[in-house]
Length: 177
Image (cartoon, rainbow, N blue to C red):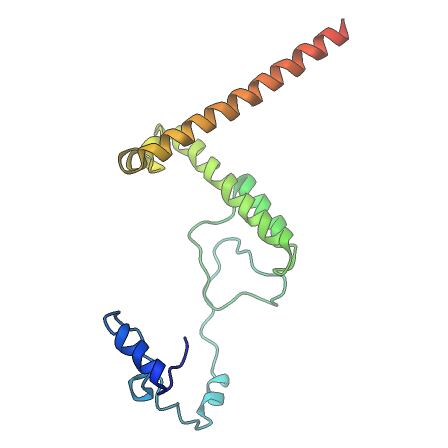
């Protein structure tokens, strides 16, 4: 945020824009929440010498960065790695966190996990209502023009892909005979 000084043009700008809530908050240093600056006492370094909290018990497989020697004191256990998405996650954690292979594999694992969740729902007798769960009802209600445009484009692209696949399949059959 730009610091405003006491020049004439800045005073005009303050008066002109005073109706905007929070505008020019840094114009007066006494109105700034960080003023006066924190007095350094050296106590900041004392927090580095703390005793490590008790290690959370590990009841399942926990994936963690290969850049860390061990687990953090506290970790999440709500969704243990399982199925194809779990295999992808295990694979992702073989790479450094600085590598795109790590993050892209984790993103793919999230997508696969979503499909696995749908399959699990169907196995347990629940058929997902995608129209409602993906927010399409609200989109149809509040942004109908964009929804129709998406449907038309999606139908056109899908039809084109199907037509190309059928055309290629017919050509292969003609060439084979």
